[in-house]
Image (cartoon, rainbow, N blue to C red):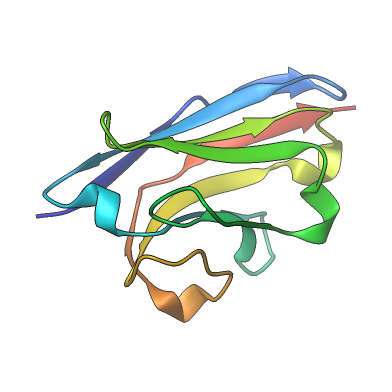
Length: 124
């Protein structure tokens, strides 16, 4: 069975950095695209970043381009989100998710497994 567990969230000052990790259990992790989403209080969940099974393709929300980097280590069954130059508007619960296929996708409905989330709070 597939389980995803996020870690690495916390409180950071504006301009600081955090590295989120998502550890996956279950078989064939390397066959699937992975993504990061976030949800702030009172707002809808939104796409942040995605990566294909081979790491050959990545997609990012426009507002995080140049600041966030998604990567994966298939041997460790782990996907990462390196977040630099953090802004208060990045404050949210961050979720990792597994795609139904191997591509990188920004579409919410293309994901079938979700982690429990990790809180990221950026102070001004």
